[in-house]
Amino acid sequence: MPRKLTGALATVALLAPFAVWAEEVRVYNWSDYIDEDLLKKFEEETGYDLIYDVFDSNEVLETKMLAGGSGYDVVVPTGDFLQRQVSAGAFQKLDKSKLPNAGNMWDMIEDRTSQYDPGNEYSINYMWGTTGVGMNVGKVKEVLGEDAPLNSMDLVLDPANMEKLADCGVYFLDAPTEIVPMVLQYLGEDPDSNDPDVISKAEAPLLAVRPHIKKFHSSEYINALANGDICVAVGWSGDVLQARDRAVEADNGVEIAYHPFAQGSLMWFDQMAIPTDAPNPEGAHAFLNFIMDAQNMAAASNYVYFANGNKASQEFLAEDVIGDVAIYPDDATLEKLYTKSPYPSKVQRVVTRMWTKVKSGT
Image 1 (spheres, rainbow, N blue to C red):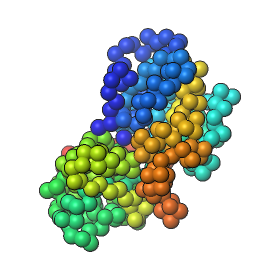
Image 2: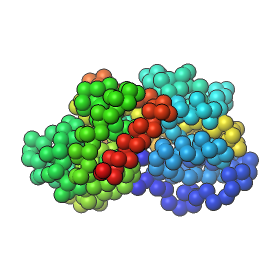
Image 3: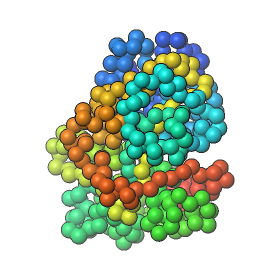
């Protein structure tokens, strides 16, 4: 989820993991995923020094978490990765007595995140959204015509369409746990399947369009879309909407739109959790409680253009956030959204091998 904070708050973890002082709170979050003013506000209100580092893939975070000794107090894995890491003992249960703002959370979202974290004992929802398609509307219609299938997986999984779009540039997320289920949904298979034989059916469609994919990356497509360097990206809802806003601010004539897939899109959840070996769990709880404040969470959503799991925040959301069905989908779209549980380790290896093959194009 090139989203990278700049300035003093975007520190790089050069210190040894355990060289931490009690007054520090260390947070590891997705790049460009919070309003920097909130980070300053947290320091001012609590007296803690905030060390804020960023990553741009679940795999990077998981490697750090499962190796132990991450040195962080709060990390933000996606739901299916959280589930696997909880099973591995990587997180501590939350002390709800230290989270008085927990009452602001949205029961509908908590019901869905309980698939990954039963009882929501280990995490709180930060943001949620869908995986769909972002596009430069003008370029796509120029290439495919006015009747281009803008909200269909046919746009990116039909080789005939992709061959034409290749000249203007197509990016895919570098995220096998999102792309493979998407292809299975397209094929009419269960996107949550853990059957290697079913999963293998995704390989041929991906290899068929692989020659026409310019790059697999999970953040660079934001600026690439906004600048008009590419015309299509399979990506995260909020990222594409950030690209849309950057294009508007640049006044460069690029019109960006986002669509969940008509066939159904993946619904994902980014969860804030406290590692088992967090150096400052007290400070970690203070950070979570700060984020769960309704106005703070609204400020975060208004910055990143993602939906959040805080019901009380909705009265403070900008109209172009709460009123945008690409961010807060209507009921008909919600009904088609699906979720993905984590792959068992043996199945994950199958998926990883397939993904390596697809990316290499061999």
